[in-house]
Length: 132
Ligand SMILES: [Zn+2]
Ligand SMILES: [Zn+2]
Image (cartoon, rainbow, N blue to C red; front, side, top):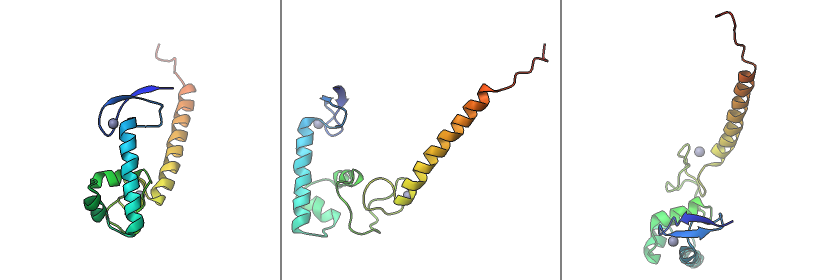
């Protein structure tokens, strides 16, 4: 199903089939840029973020996006560049550290259960008639 979306990269309105948040033009540029990073890292293994960004003229924030999307991964665990959005621990890719992923998925389930219990309680809530 086609949807109208705002491209996350250039802001233009485009038709998307749900999976993409960026327009086809940006997608192509994105892929090309990503290929450049891949190629660079292949030729210069263990380059740091700033070298890649400066030599390829790609913004750090874009590299960070690739990291968040798990398309790139930082070699060192303690990198001080990418942090878990929940607890702030250094992570190599994605948005959360393993510990928080485990905690979060557990938390979601717990919250859902609690809601269910409240809903059940509401159903059987006793209404006293003695006020009349
Ligand atoms: Zn775009
Ligand atoms: Zn965490």
